Length: 310
Image (tube, rainbow, N blue to C red; front, side):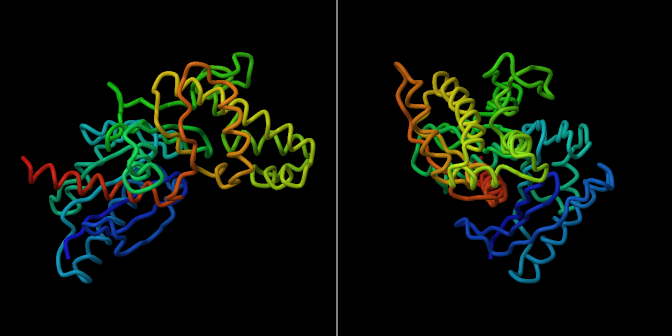
């Protein structure tokens, strides 16, 4: 059975799958990234994991994977197959595509940015299926974005397109690791809400999920924290839709797990801010934490279809 290898590398864990031609997950596996062992050990773990997946495919399906796709965090040069920089993994200029191709016996390998790869999956087979223009925004440790155009994801001239988390929405806001102040991700990421709610509640272990529960129970302090985050998020999204005019905004990540506790006030806050802009559909992501892995599989199949057409 023809299949490809898909790998989604995160700061703490790796998700992997063997994916059939119709997008079916034929086999799934997870493993710790092990970043505490250093960047070289992380790269070796990725290569070894991919090799194990290849061996499993040979054993179960009678043939080797036809291609592989891998999604990684940080700055990615997808065209040249280089993982340029990832602060949470400590690597710089890793020729990931070449290393994986060599370990996998020369099969074609596609390298992608984790959020853009997740956006590809959401756009083709998830919440954005059928939408010609969308913006995928996962609200997690930070905030990033993927700009979907006609079934592809726009990477930009230098691979930095979609970094909505570093749009300044509160110029007098908190310092951001990027060097600016008041970036969207300092105010509306799951991490930002966790910090704000831990401070407001006096419980250092309280997180964004706890804040959402407190909002649902009517806690006024939680409502204030939540409203501040939603207002900042709406400001960032309106900036994005003013520039991009998407048909759909797909919101994912940990904060989106709050469901209507997030989406009801967020839709209202965005609608309140738009003037001449067309209001897009604002919907939750559909694929959860499998989006990156599914997207990596799509990148691999795209490689094969490109080879055939060439």
